[in-house]
Length: 162
Image (cartoon, rainbow, N blue to C red):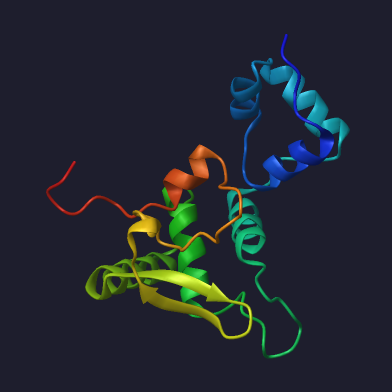
């Protein structure tokens, strides 16, 4: 049987959204082995909203302070998280669904992608080929999350295209 990665690598992959199934497949191990190791390390599966928030915070190092200069609650940041949650099958409230629709409409209208700067916060930036179909600009040098989360960050196909 293949060996799972080091504890540090497993912890990193867990925080990037890798599931036990995905880890097992990647390393040729059994799902149960990945599950046992994760639990022994104190890493527990979390609700979708928590997974999404952790993934975004890990990717962008989002400024979260108790003062008024925190970025985690900016409207586009919230809409981004709602969108990814929705893509993962989470049920949203009608106001959350409206925020997602408004976000997608603006991204399409402006040919934009969400980008983040720790000093200024989240912004709509011109889409580049490197962005692909993602709603958020992935930072250079950062590992991509699990395939499931990567797919959840992608814009839906244009109307009429399937």
